[in-house]
Image (cartoon, rainbow, N blue to C red; front, side, top):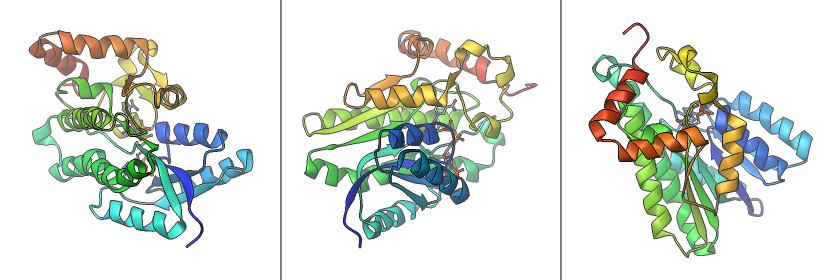
Length: 263
Ligand SMILES: NC(=O)c1ccc[n+]([C@@H]2O[C@H](COP(=O)([O-])OP(=O)(O)OC[C@H]3O[C@@H](n4cnc5c(N)ncnc54)[C@H](OP(=O)(O)O)[C@@H]3O)[C@@H](O)[C@H]2O)c1
C-alpha cells in the first residue's frame, strides 16, 4: 500500500457536471479520484488534468448499478492509499415516460445508482471523516426533487430522497467539522438529455439552461456555507414556489412540462 493521501472522490466524472467539478477541483490542485464506467473517458480527462495542473488524479472504474460496487471502491481506495476527504455523489441518470410502460429493470437500476450507491458510499466514507473532524459530502439532487414528477416518477422520487437524506445528514453533522451539501441543479446542458430523448427539450427557452461549469462553480463555492444549493435564480424561485403552491397544482404543472413528445 502506498502512503495515504487525501482526495476528492467524484462519481460520474466521465461527463457533464461531474467532469466540470473534476476540472475545477484539479485546477485548485486538489487530488481527485474519478469514478464512472467509461474508463477511456476518465483516463483521457486524467491525462489532461495532470498535464494542465500537475494535479494528482486517480481513475477508478465502477458500475454503480451493481450492488457490490461501493465495497469494491472502498477496498480499491484503501489499496491505493486514497483517503476520501471530499465525497461527491454525482453519478445518476433519468428515465422518462409513463412508469407502467418503462422497463422495470432500468427503473430499479435508477434507484440503485441515484439512491442506493449514494447511501452506500456515504456510509463507507463518512465515519472516517467524522473521526478526523473534517471532510465534505456533496450529493447531487435536482430541482426535480422538490415535487412529484409525472413522466419522470422514479427519477424525481430518487432526487427527493437525496434531498431529504442530505438535509438530515447536514443537521446530524453540525459541529462535527464535516460539511454536507445537497446540490439541486435545474436544466443543465450535459449528456443527460441525450439519454432522455423522449423529452422535448428543444421547446425550452434558452434562459432556463445552465452550463455544467456554472453548476460546478456554484457547488464548490457552497461547500461549508450552506446545506442546500438550488442553482440559479429561476430554479430557486421554482423550488420555493413548489413548497408554497398546493401540491396538486404543482404536480399538474410538472406533468404538463414533462409530457413525452407527441403525447
Ligand atoms: N443535466 C441536468 O439537467 C441535471 C439536472 C439536475 C440534476 N442532474 C444530476 O446531475 C448528475 C450528473 O448528471 P449530468 O447532467 O452531468 O449527466 P451526464 O453527463 O449524463 O453524466 C452522468 C454521469 O453519471 C455516470 N453514471 C451513470 N450511470 C452510472 C453507473 N451505473 N455507474 C457509474 N457511473 C454512472 C456517467 O458515467 P458513465 O456513463 O461513464 O458510467 C456520467 O459520468 C446526475 O445525478 C443528474 O441526475 C442533472
